[in-house]
Length: 205
Length: 270
Image 1 (spheres, rainbow over the protein chains, first blue to last red):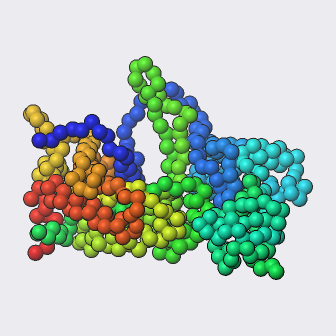
Image 2 (cartoon, each protein chain N blue to C red):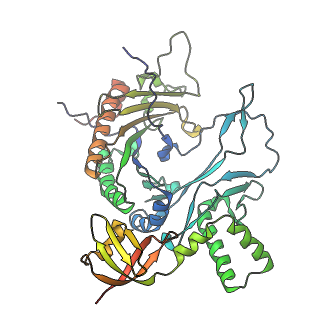
């Protein structure tokens, strides 16, 4: 006998994973709201990061970007970013957003922003985590320290007396060291002074 | 155990294998470009899938869907293929964050040169690379999806002189409607999901939907989708093993869902 269980499936199926289902279903929906003539529709573009430098550097966003689609011009625009593209090229929006940021960042750094660009730059600073970007972008700087324990939790005492745990991936850079070894290296830190990377290792003494 | 029948011209137009996992956007975005460079050696056509998704919500007392301007979403899915969409993709890979999908197309009218083993081989070649590249430690589930097109091109002997499609002579499901009537009419949209005896919590979904393509005349898409939850410790080999089990389930249902007359028209191999 066929029974119907009240337990719903854990996950939904997505038939659209098949290219053969790429065509939208032509079913009629009824709306009571007049969409208006040539009215722009604003879409959320859910993402929290934009890749810069091939993904080696990420630009973190503070709010979900919003994209306005204009049926009159066939263009889409990222609001507050001054980035416009034909809707058919919407896949390039993340790239163009990152490029816009880099362009204004470079001009701001060089002090060559025009008045209009200055306003755009200030608007963009509300959209991104600029502090995190600057920290992520900063070059590693030289530090000296002593390896306390290599495993299971790698710990290092830095020259200023602070002690830090090193993640297993980063700790691979120290795999040749023995407990007590003193070393110098170029170290990349995050906002909390946690170690993101260690390179150009040298033994001291 | 008897071997499943091999058909030279089954109406299968696409087979799709997918795995799903949790993946942070940071992990995905920081490794996507290197992944694209790897994939593009084999899948040179880049055509990201753009979806302008508009949701409808019932917000009135009359229960009439009202266009909700706060919900629309733009979704972009990286997609790579061997041929362009205009040429029918042939093979394609989709890889949004937390998902890896391989699509294999076939043309039932040109003889069944492609089988599950071809999809399996390609999937097994790329899955370990995807797992390693994105540092995936835990896959949640896999799905295997077969799309069958029942049309004048794939089952021509089941159309009468007036051009009507004798669907009830092709499939055994969703065609028995009690009462007196002349014919089925579009829209035809039937879905059933059943829980399978094994692996635990696996399910099969069967969908029959009219194919809205005036050039084809009356036609139907029939989908089999098997979904299997994955044990947290499963690696690439175990995942492929589960994919094999999903395939076996689909093969068994294929034998039951199509009528003997339809299967005879698919040219069973001797």
